[in-house]
Image (cartoon, rainbow, N blue to C red):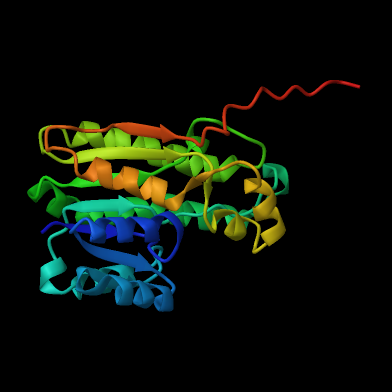
Length: 248
């Protein structure tokens, strides 16, 4: 039985990935800050799921949680780097610096440090690394600034790992979703339910399950097949036009 570690498993895409992998016969380690959600997930999924309660930005707590893994969960075959967030929708010149720091610490630094820590084992087991990036890595939009920059890092980091890991048997993939209806916008807007409902209204957006099934499909590819990157949008979302500022 293979083992996957899924970061940010307390909601949205991370939770859906944990469920999809467990239902497909994998052992799953799910990380997150909200203990009650992880324990509820463990109650649902049973012995195939192990909760690791810690903040991905806390290296000491992360290392302690990984060191305390039950023996059956020690050997990690697939790392799903899902944990991440967007904070605020303000233009760069109006944004809060602390929000920028939090996004960088979570989306970039924590992702990179966990990947670095698990690389020796993933190389030994010829495993897989699946990164959750975003279409924001490629297509800029007003207010996307640092969030888009962090997701561009994730995409480029995945491509760089592919180069570095050539010959090791480790597979690396960047998954780049467009509009997915989760708690993402609630977090971004500090709990503004109206803003979240307005964003997704009438769009028929992707679901967390849609992305989770894609992640599982990537993880289950034969050892000789690598999916470099996948960009996924709902049919009702497409590319925006260029902005033009006109002098009055």
